[in-house]
Length: 269
Image 1 (cartoon, rainbow, N blue to C red):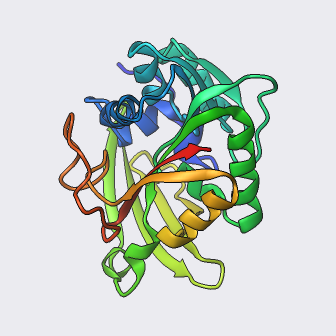
Image 2: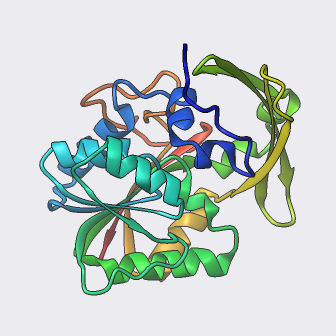
C-alpha cells in the first residue's frame, strides 16, 4: 500500500511539489541540459556557470556532470531542497533572478532556461536582471536563454483558441490540468490560467501566472544597452521545439524568429 502523502493543492502546486513537477514534465534525456552544454561548448564558455531559475536542478546537475562548476539559483525553497537531495553536484542558492547579487562570485556563463527570463514582467525588472547578469559575468561571459517567442503571437491565435488538457498520475492519484492562455496586450504579457483537479476529492485549484512577451528587436536593443553583443537569436532547433533539437544540430541558416520558442546567446563586451 502506498503511504506517500498526496501533495496538497497549494497556491503553486508544481513549485510546492517538485517531484510532481518532474512527473508532469519529464526530461529523461536531459535534452535541455544537453542543449545548453552544446551551446556553451560551441561558444567556448569557461567552466563557471550560473543556472538562474534552476527549478528541480536537473539541468544544473547535467552541466555539473559535464565538468562545469555550477551554481543553481531559484526563488522556490521546495525546489532548491529537492535539487540538493536528488540532483547533487551544483551548489544551490536562493535568489530572485529579477534582481540578484551573489557577492564577489564571477561566472563565465549565465544560463536561463524554460522561459524563466520572462518572469521579468516590466522593463525595470528586465533592466535589473541584465544589470545583475553583467555584474556576475566575467568580461566576455555568455548569457544563454531559452524562452517563448513574443513574435509568434503576431497574427496567430492557435495557442490561445483551445485550452490544453494534461494528466499525470503520481502516487496513485491522477491530476488533471486545464490550461488557458490569453494575451494582455497593454502589459505585453501572456497570461496563463491553470485549473487543477484530482481524483481523490481534493478541492480544485485555480492558478494564475504570466510571462512577458519579448520581441527579437526589443531583446537586441535591451542587451546592447546593457553591454551585450547578440551572437545568436533564433527559433529552432531547441530543447522544446518540435521537432526537438538533436545533439550537435546547429540553428537554421539564415536564422529566423517565426516559431513559438526563441533561443538567445549573447556575450558581455
